[in-house]
Image (tube, rainbow, N blue to C red; front, side):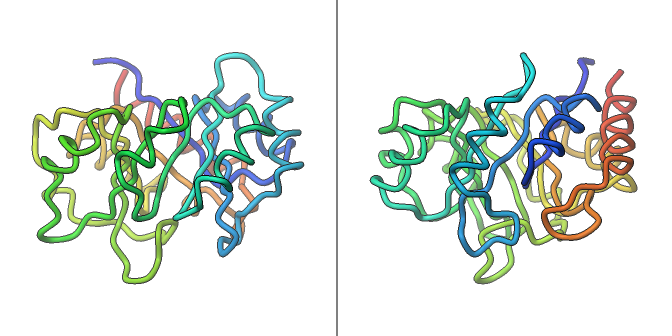
Length: 208
């Protein structure tokens, strides 16, 4: 069993980025959705990406942005991955010549097998909790039993993960990676480095 890969999302400062990278995060998420309390400006995102150490990936999160808005951002911020959390089509996501992740809000009746087929060019599917009107970052878990085994795309598990449940989640789902935001915060957008360290250690210990 290989070591679990971990993304800490909703990073809002260079200091946070460097702390979570030092704690062992494989990737950090930068939110460009203006309605999120974790939204960062392009200038802050530039500074964060510029200071990231090697082998820590940067992921930009978009929610129903226009093509022009996405291009304007990626022209200024050298992101490693794009993450789409809205109603974007496979064609929309694939047009930017960037590796991308498609987020799916999981509830009863959502056909993840078909999503994996439709988004065949995605690097992974990020599975999050469904809450009506909220594109992500709910801090809520969902029924992991709704995830079919043997999906054709790697799974990044998100949605309400924290130190107390991440090992159980890994055992239940066996994802490629886990993604956490609110579960390691003091308050929205302000990470608690001790929670980050404990989360990362817990996730890695489950898969050593």
